[in-house]
Image (cartoon, rainbow, N blue to C red; front, side, top):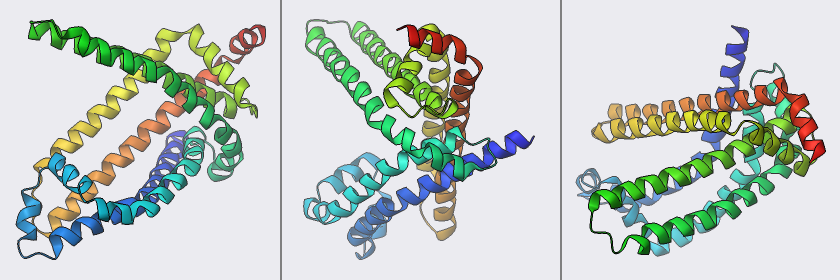
Length: 280
């Protein structure tokens, strides 16, 4: 029971830090929307009729307003990148009593690992995306069956998702290796994550895919519920915010649970992974 409570503390800390980082950009965009709708007589009616995708298109067309927000949004992005290793450290050390201290000790290792894992994911996914884009675009130009086109596109999306799941799983195992084994060298931690993934790729796909499906289902379900909520009145507005933050908290729970699974993997089976990594 104490372990469950400890993980909830980690999830709450992860959620709180994520919410704090997102508050600045969210308030900036809210101020932008208020400038267009709040000060107009028909602003409430206009906003209530604006669907999510047209709203995004509307915001993106406000070039001057977005340029004014640019420096603040770039600063928020930089702050988010710097805070990402701390969020990862909170998730990986959620079960520890000294949560904040342990996350702080792991920060340097996770920060060094972040650009390496990001570079590998981009380097692999870029050609995969380009290849699938060509195959599912020009490659299907002569296909007349809509069913086949749909099947090919679903298969292509599933293939890209499987590759991305494997890569993010390797990155998760590398972060777990850096924390569980106190490994300061990013390349060595990544190597241990790769060897662990190669030892049991099916297990990694199943683990990462399960949590990815859960996160997608949670987000889609919350979005559909949020879209169904009317926007009139302060009470409904508070309900919408509560729904969004509750969804964010559940996503933090999923993040902590997945990080704990990676950490257990690299803690329970250290000998086989190290011996394979050393022999490589």
